[in-house]
Image 1 (cartoon, rainbow, N blue to C red):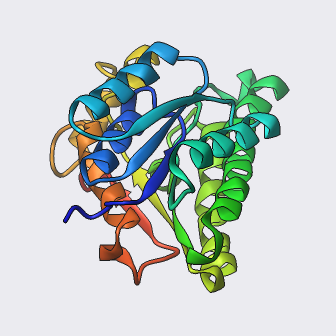
Image 2 (tube, rainbow, N blue to C red; image 1 turned 180 degrees about the vertical axis):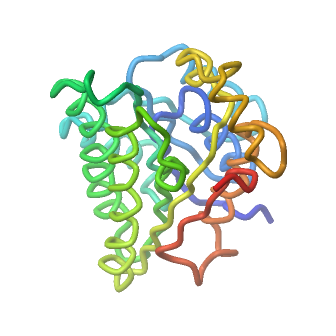
Amino acid sequence: MKKLTEKVAVVTGASKGIGAGIAKGLAAEGAAVVVNYSSDKTGAEKVVADIVSNGGKAVAVQGNVSNQADVDKLFAEANQNFGGVDILVNNAGVYQFGAIEDITADEFHRQFNTNVLGLLLVTQGAVKSFGDKGGSIINISSTVTRITPPGSSIYTATKGAVDSITQVLSKELGPKNIRVNAINPGIVETEGTHTAGFIGSDFHAEAIKTTPLGRTGQPDDIAPIAVFLASEDSKWLTGETMIASGGMR
């Protein structure tokens, strides 16, 4: 039997990149997947089509994770389509690097609203949907909290918050049989890292030099870790931060 048969997963920000990879990975192990997206409907529908063509179950649901009404709709759709939720992957995130002189209040709030407030609101919705059976929450953080690169003040702060929230909620939700863990990827080659100019940059080259495994990560390097954390294989793990960086520290 597959590891996640009869389980239902919500993956936020799953229209591309790491989120899409995780959604497909969970589906391959038997989970029905709610593919959340903010604006890339085409990408989300492609992820759903890929899952369905491989014999899985999935539905795309639009929603801004920092908007309470959208979060309520996300879980209503999950309940309507699949009868509940067992797994949440908080993957939705935004980033922009810049020097301290360039920081604006708008950019601060843009990143914190999605990366931190959004994570909290979606987690609230998941806790209600899990019910007495409990569940698994997987927060996608980042190794920026360890390597603290220049120009990343806001983004690193948001992911530092994610790491701390993971620790707090693992203790708060443990009595409800809800496990909360984080995956902290290094640089992963995605549409987002290409668009941001990281791939092929001097920063990228230096990151590869300091990565013992000597390459950039791929979404399918992260997806199996999420499957592990979602499954009974990790039933005795909570409050853990899994550094998935090819050894980069």
